[in-house]
Image (tube, rainbow, N blue to C red; front, side, top):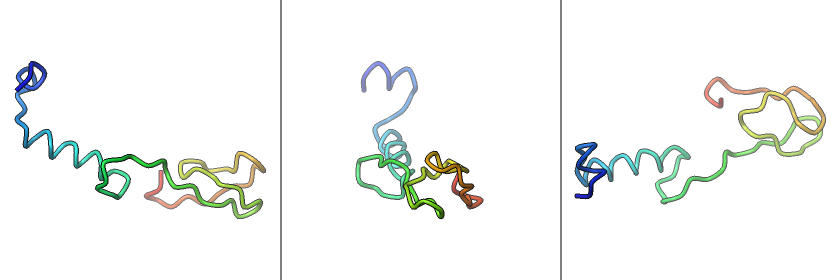
Length: 69
């Protein structure tokens, strides 16, 4: 156990579980965090990041689902 683990009082198993939890935020347990999935703008078909409500290229409103933000 290193100094940080002793300070936080975390054992290896707890750290592994936390790492897996963070890794699963993108929907995959693969050791990487992928960028948010972009979807095409309904007007100009350019990619729009999932957190945007308007296309940055043409200004068209983009429908955002209730769990996408």
